[in-house]
Length: 265
Image 1 (cartoon, one colour):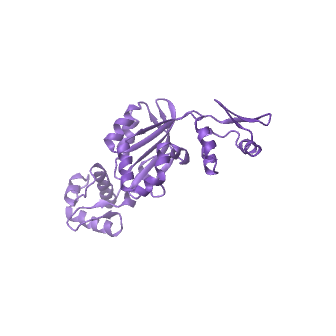
Image 2 (tube, rainbow, N blue to C red):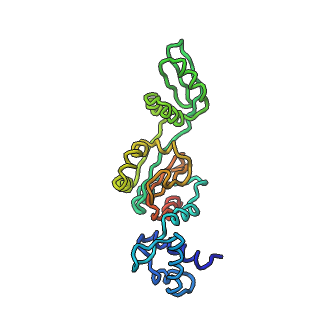
Image 3 (cartoon, helix red, strand yellow):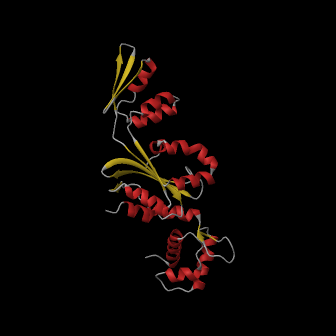
């Protein structure tokens, strides 16, 4: 059973996510499931501000959850170990707009490298599960690709980029047959306009879908985004098709309701 402090903290987080403005003790009192005076709530507020769980911007204002509080809240609430199951892709457009969240997803079919064939020292034929790819012969490239038999083409694209084979990566990317979709672009543009340095470094990877291949399923904060933002990356089934999905937004967005409505049957 939660103690009073946990109930107060949990309630102020939920109210702040619904409407991201400072929460007063009197307002919070009306939302609590337990009976407690506003004076007692103010005492808890003071203690939680001192402990860094809440913040108060002005003496006369209410309190808001600190960034670390919101991060810890979403770490507990959002499950990245379970694949998202979205039966209607039109919901993505609807709910990214309603909840002010940017969402990127791309469908994909596994396409692994099966064999590297040397054709008379003139060409190399890269035989994938679903396609073939021909490049000029090179002994180092022949040895290189033989090290990656069984590897997914999207992973090969990233490997080529990392070691400076950018032109080869670009050609291989055409073999991947991945369909990239972007929804809620207004939120991405707002993030970029407020954080131009971040945008200059990451916008290309976001728009071309490279970021989806670089990230493992999980939650990301300052290691990927500016302070105050969250990224949720996971595998998904969208209308029964395999997909990778990335959602980005401010920490104060209601991700719990967003994903609940997105996956509702």
